[in-house]
Structure formats: C-alpha cells, structure tokens
Amino acid sequence: MKIFSVKSIPIVSWSSDHALSFRPRILTLCILCTGLTIFGIGDALLIASGAGNSPWTVLSQGVSQISGWSIGVTTFLTSLAVLLFWIPLKQKPGIGTILNVVLISIAIEVSLPYLPQPDSYGLQVVEAGLGILLVGFGSGLYLIANLGPGPRDGLMTGLQRVTNLPVARVRTAIEVAVVFFGWLLGGTIGLGTLMFAFGIGPAVSMGLYVVNYFSTRST
Image (cartoon, rainbow, N blue to C red):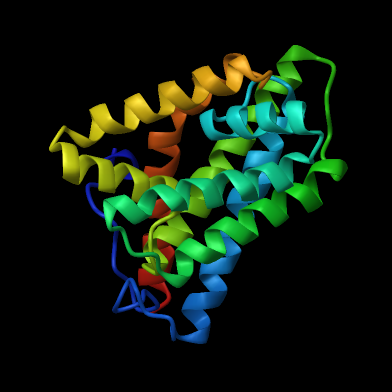
C-alpha cells in the first residue's frame, strides 16, 4: 500500500525552503506548531493509557519518579540534555528543533490531566493505539514543515555520521538504551511500549502520506 511505502519526506507548497531558517512563512510555522502539539497530545495519551510509554517517555517518567517533577517538565529537561550531545556531534538546530523541545512538553503537561485513564486493559490498548496514530500524524506535519529535526532525530543522525553505522542500528541502540535506563528509574514499560516500537514507523509513514495527499489536493 502506498500509505506505508513513503521513502522520503515530501516537499509541499508550505514546506520551508531551508531547514535552518529562523524566518519561516507564518503558514509553515503554524503548521509546525500544530504538528508538535498533536505529537505531544499523542504522547500524553500513551502515558494516560497506562499500557506502556514510548521509549523516551519511559526515561522522562523515570526521571519524574525520582525528582518529583511533572512529566512535562522532565520531558523538557530531557530534550535539553539531548541537545547538549549535539555540540560534540556538530549538529545545528533549527527553529523546529527549539519548538519541538518547548511545545511537546507543554502539550503533555496541559493535556495529561484531562485525558481518560481507563481501568479496562482493552481500553488502555485502544488509547495507546490512538496515541501512536496522533504521534505519527503530528510527525508528518512537523517533518514536512522542514524547519529542523527534533532533538532525538538530530542525535540519531549525528551519531550515524560519526560512527558510520546504519541508521537503523544507531536508532535501535539509542531506543534500547533509553528504555533500559528509564525502566531502571521507574518508568512504565508494557504492551504500549512494544506497540510504539513496531507501530511508530507505519504511523509516521501514514502521517506523511495523508499530509502530503491533502496538501497536494489543496493546491
């Protein structure tokens, strides 16, 4: 199916011409912010479901458990910490990188108290699945905006460049390490974590396809 076979980030009429531009068009900036907000709400749905978090949220939740800070705050601080690793890797942030750090954290912090926390395991899995779909759709919006990678994506590409290892191997190593340390700190892992690991790729592909399809149709 075409929806699961996207091989590159589409470029549409509202995509930024330069990933590191700090003066993007208003439309591009608004779509970027919308995508990051949707991404954050999707991540919050995974947390609220109780079925298991995405790898980086496992780490953020673990830090939250030992620090007493909210998970929105620890998500923000974790993203900042990841950006510090960009310095030796000589990665350059764009405005999308900075907004990624801020808006996803805010979206989690604001939406989490209002999201359902079902007792039924079946409903927990459904909520986790919805969260993954929203993360995928939000990713489609922010990636097509082309205003700089998120902190974790930049870490992946930077490590891949200096190690010359395959992207898949680098990303897998990062995700496994993050889940392990997050679990040691008390973060929640479960079926939702596995669902995210195997489902986020198709969800992002779906998001890219849908955003590209409707953007093309509207021009």
